[in-house]
Length: 138
View (cartoon, one colour):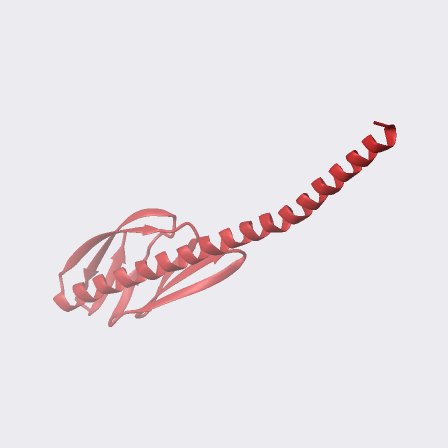
């Protein structure tokens, strides 16, 4: 076999390897992007579930009246960045992929208190107050 044939085989090998790289790179980028989107969707779903459980517990405590108290344990997801109480609303802020997403849940009564937004399991106490509000604390 001559020198020219070996050179041709090497060039063909480089061409095939380069083509494979060009095809795999966009596929990898799409996979990473979709993985981030899935994580964000999971955080939104978990936060919505947290809001639903909190509101159900708030209503139970509120309708049982003062001095009713209830303790629940909830898992807060990684991208949950803030939880605030605005009169009768719980406002969750999720920060993922450079955007702030807001999840709002409404209760039948005014809410007071504060919750940490750190990821992990939280033990939360809900207490009916004598002024027809519900206090939510950790």
